[in-house]
Amino acid sequence: MDNFDNEMRLAFQAKSCNEALARMTVAAFLTPLNPTLEELADTKTAVSEAVTNAIIHGYGESEGTVEVWCARRGKEVFFSIKDTGAGIPDIAAAMEPMYTTKPEMERSGMGFSFMEAFTDELSVESAVGEGTVVKMKKVIG
Image (cartoon, rainbow, N blue to C red; front, side, top):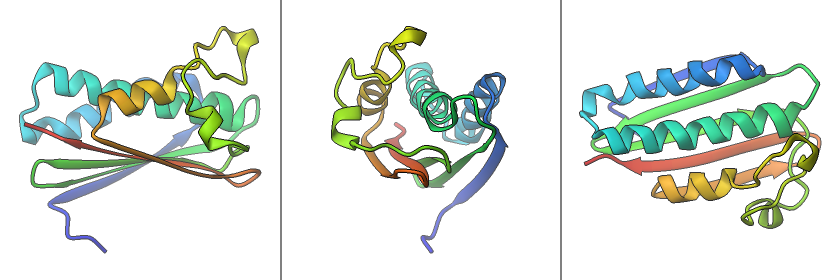
């Protein structure tokens, strides 16, 4: 186990109304690091995109749980967003800008692009029928 200054876990039903909960919880977790408004907005956006993907693409109309984990070590903040939903058959394709499996929902296909742009590191692990874990790292300051 890594030696973190602090960490937290949050689990909630895969419902769109909980996206704001994830954003605000992550923002509160970052507060002791005194992030700039830009750092705060970037991080909230990246986490929100990952949570939205888990809800819409991971579970669709099915019920499920989304887990958010955050940890701090110095100025480094680590996040993971996990679902046990559908999984991603082709991660490389899914990470391409404008790629979406839900065009009928007017999805932009920019979720992973935003996550990548607003964090310092991004990785995605997924297995079809088992779910997806999105891991991100952001250095504050």
